[in-house]
Length: 324
Ligand code: 5GP
Ligand code: MN
Image 1 (cartoon, rainbow, N blue to C red):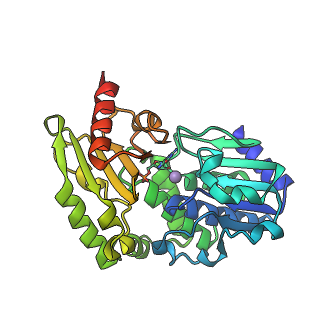
Image 2 (image 1 turned 90 degrees about the vertical axis):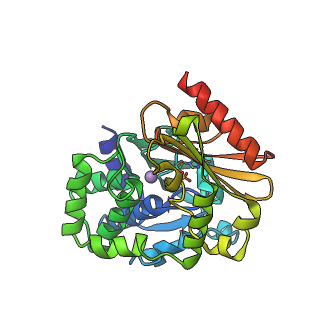
């Protein structure tokens, strides 16, 4: 039903703002580029604008150059009456691009976060979907369109990133079936895998060593914490590294079920990644306790005005409570 409504939304509107969350990642970017391909086939006009630049490592995507980064001057240029917002659980997460929308703008929200607040005029929110890219692909089918090569590449990247290279618990037969179709349409798994995962700046490796060095085990080895402090995060190395995936280091230890990675990017402001590999703890709920959210097995939150040690204690105590 929601699929039909979303397809109607695309048919009946035009001149879209196409956007994703702040600091857009592989699924956010892959999904909006995939959607851009679909809009083109529908003969629609659109602008792809995100609050922040996409991750550097996504620069290889063939459609990358259509992505614009928000700047204040855009406010004088754009006032969108319709928007497609992808991989975003609540309005705040689109950041400054919100100022490019008319007050009564119609919104199509496409998302797979369990915490999604359904803030659109039409909401296509499927928490069981592995990636937002999977939902965008469903819209191709609903509208009877086939993937062009660039869109296939972008959607494959979204799927690959949000399934942790096709290995998380969100991987279903449907994910592999879609992956196969995207490969048929031109996505090259070997090349994309190399570009995404075997192409690290040296700084990332040094950062990884730091994270591994910081690992501590708690709860008899069931929980692992790791951290990167302000000085390292703001060193030349820290600024150049890509820390996506670092949280998997503490998580990938034998016996570990839950992991927290704490990063202090700004003085006194912590960004925390929460991960679980069992159903015993809902990391979305745990992150919500601190004002964040995400998925049951992968979520994130921020903490201000506490030290890394204090954050560690707060997280471990909240985890303890959640298990009761
Ligand atoms: P990561 O730890 O990789 O940054 O984020 C993991 C998941 O948690 C992602 O799905 C992301 O959307 C979500 N997430 C991360 N940080 C936040 C946050 O501050 N607020 C909310 N609501 N979700 C977050
Ligand atoms: Mn996603």
